[in-house]
Length: 296
Image (cartoon, rainbow, N blue to C red; front, side, top):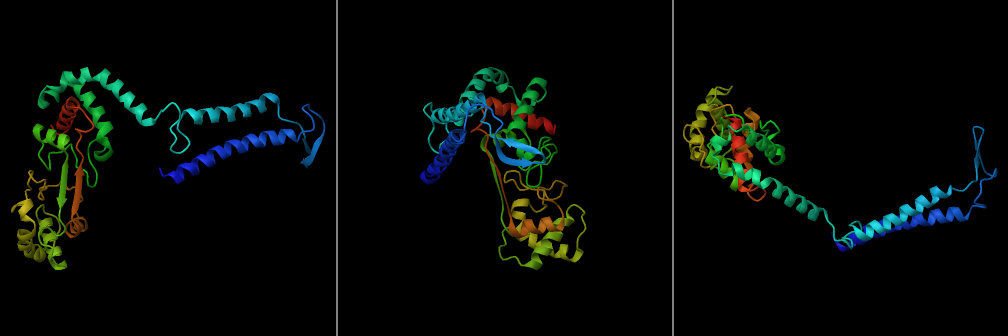
């Protein structure tokens, strides 16, 4: 946070507290007596008159105590811009402390499964309960709580794997992440609109979708020049590159003419972040087994 905004927040916060303090004393000083009277303020509505009585002492001192407490809290804890408080407490340090406690508590449990092969671990009910929780906390935000994916995020419950669905492939993905890149117009940057239409119709023909026969026929050459290098001459994909199979029903960005046209025209960029910076090797082993179990 910049110095300006730090000072701005501090002035607003302290100013509000001192304004409340002043308001309490100013209004109390204006009272003619500390005792209840029948004197009115002169305001009357619907037959009800407003009495000019002071706040009860317990109520007044409760307000005063609140102001004192607020000042004490802001002196000890963060709340005034960049000032961290005399105790040095922060959300980050509190989180780190809780993580360390949790790691010490559960590391032995994770270690029991860390050396077990993924295929065997996928059959262990206790390990899969742990895997489900790891998935919910770390993966569900992209792939969904049921792991069925969304537009741009793969479905992990089917047999269509961009980089392979074997245990070693899943472990590599979790440990190192993946960076997908579908270049705009493939390897034909000079592809014109007619060629885009042709190659889209040709791709639609792979899985029997509705297409323009003449355009699809003309799209064979366009596909061979701009797309076959990654997706293969038969469009079966290439797991080593993360190039998807174009002949099945698993489409990361939709299978309609419009979706495919957008992909060809503008390309796609995907990023699967590596989990080794956030999870231990034992946790990744359990998580890999859980993901493996979803489609096996």
